[in-house]
Each structure stands twice: as structure tokens, then as C-alpha cells.
Length: 108
Image (cartoon, rainbow, N blue to C red; front, side, top):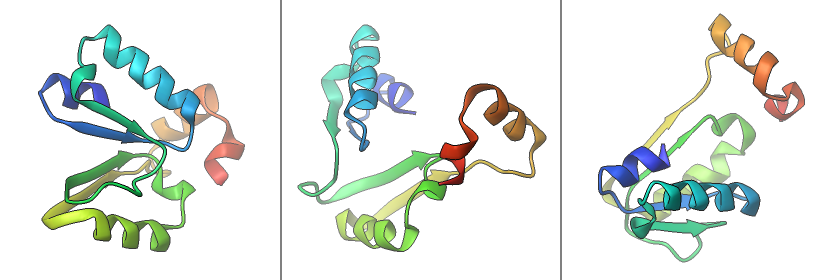
């Protein structure tokens, strides 16, 4: 999601606990000449007044109660939280995990 948002001119703060993943993201953004509006962080501790917090396929890995209270504190008034999650009733998702991901990671 980050690269398309950057290509559209949005300022993006990419947050991940994995510095390795963030490094790959920065390399990809730089390769696409879209890294000028990218900040990379391992947490949101110093960020405030965020307009939109979004993510893909991570909510089943975190304690939602802890993180959503943090998200609400970081949002500006009338800000949005938008997440998409995998649907385990969708056979293509099960196929995707079986081929490309680790089931142990998905169960966390």
C-alpha cells in the first residue's frame, strides 16, 4: 500500500517492528523515486495529529485493544482508521498462505 500512496503524492509514515522490512520498503520506494515523502519508523511514539492510519493483514497479529487505543490518541480530530484483513472463508487466501506464507506466523 505504501508505494501507491507515495506515487499519488501522499506523505506516508511507514511503521513496522521489523527494521529489515522497513529497509526493503525504503529500497523499493527509492527505486520508484517516491521516497521523498516517506518516513520510516518502528513505532508511532513521537507522531501526533495523523490524518489516516491504515494497514493490511496485520490485525490478527496484534492485541487490538492496546493498538486501537494508541491509534485513537495519535489521530487528529475526525481522522480515519482503515484496515483490511484476510478472510479465511476465501479459498484463495488459504491457497496463498499455503504457497507463500508460513502458517505458524499466521496463527500468532
